[in-house]
Image 1 (spheres, one colour):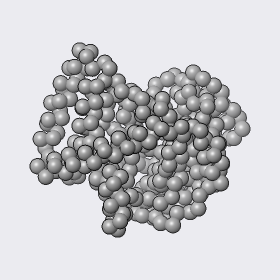
Image 2 (cartoon, helix red, strand yellow):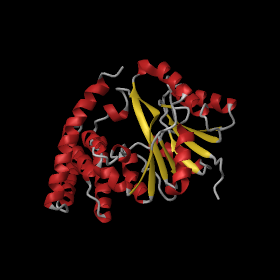
Image 3 (cartoon, helix red, strand yellow):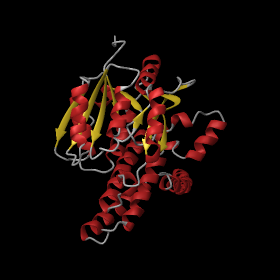
Image 4 (cartoon, helix red, strand yellow):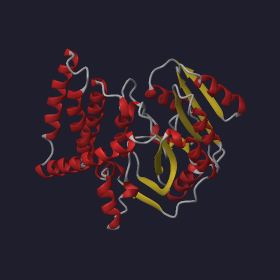
Amino acid sequence: MSNSIPLISIIVPVYNAEDYLRYCVDSILQQSYANLEVILVDDGAKDSSPQICDEFAAQDNRVTVIHQENGGIAKAQNTGLDAAHGEYIAFADNDDILDRHNIEYLLHALQNTGADMSKARWRQFGVSQLDEVAQEAAIGVDAPNKITVFEHPLAAYQTVFCKSLRLIGDKLGHNTEARYFNEANWCRLYKRKLWDGIRFPEGMYAQDVMVAGELYTRMGKVADLNVNLYNWLQSAGSVTHKERSFSFCHDNFAAGAANFRLCLEQGVRPGRSYYTLVGAFHEEITAPDFDDPASQQQHKADKAELDELLGKLSPVQRIHCAATRQIRLLEKRIYDVKIKNMK
């Protein structure tokens, strides 16, 4: 029988986050659920982040700091996974802020539903809102008034990624908002066994996308909490919003292709992976280093793989995937304007 107060390991990759790191770690150490193992992985940061990590470790024995040479976020996450002792695993980005009840509510949902993973909602905020958001998070939100438990998370991940369609689905009583996933690993609580034999591919930009499909195939049930428990800082200089090299685009293509193939094996229509795959292929052409011979050769290989994968879809599947891609592209234009104007 599981411990009623199990140890939760929270993994935080840290790199050049001196302006925001204290907000993040404070929000973790102030959690209403106290039995935590906080693993701060300093991935060769060049600012004062390593010293800040060590200060937290000296002040709170729940904090473990691992210093390593820079190897990217995947390597840092893997280091954290290898060092974790908890019965459950959570992740946080080093510039985000957790609601005070994040772990408490997510764990309660897992224990009471028998789900393999629980997740909650999140909100985005700008740098100018740091102190305000931190104060609100320290107070904490009320408990969720609804927990939705659903099966087949891989199908949900692939089919309910358009915001407008999710809202329509909710209006029709299908609880589609509850079935939404993004590729991030934060604002989720995983049973530790889900990560047995799974690690992030190191040296890739799309490391979280690459493991998403395999993780979801291992889950029998997922619990969704209809409450915001995570605050996601928006920074124009982040890799997600700024990086557009050919390698970045190709890594997203490769991750999309891997999940596309997995979906075909599982009999799931790969709507989201179609969006990722086709979008990344077209973005490769816009990369500043696209004219490099190596990029040209890889793009040609990607074209062959794209044609092969799309050829495996039925005409109806292809029409459906193309239509949802167009909806998502329109939503993304609106999203990008919102993010770029967030201060």
